[in-house]
Image (cartoon, rainbow, N blue to C red; front, side, top):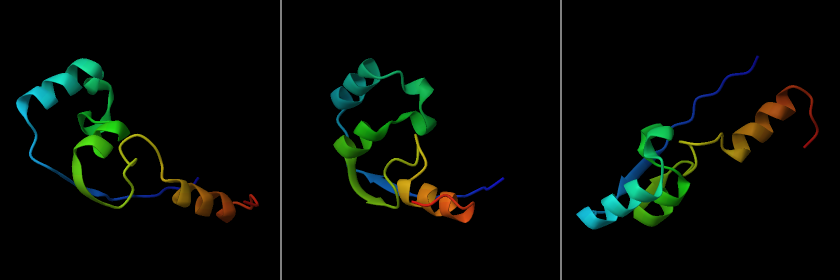
Length: 74
């Protein structure tokens, strides 16, 4: 068994109430870690340090390293 921890810092720009409401109506936010999915990061973030998809998936680079650890040639 392999385990990993990934940390990302996402700084969001100031949001308008209508942007928040539109987002909440468009996505089932209760299904996402932190109530956001990747499109929200791209729409609303000022800056991302780390992987922007950390809330919904393992970063591809981390997965590649873990697969190599167990002998999978990538």
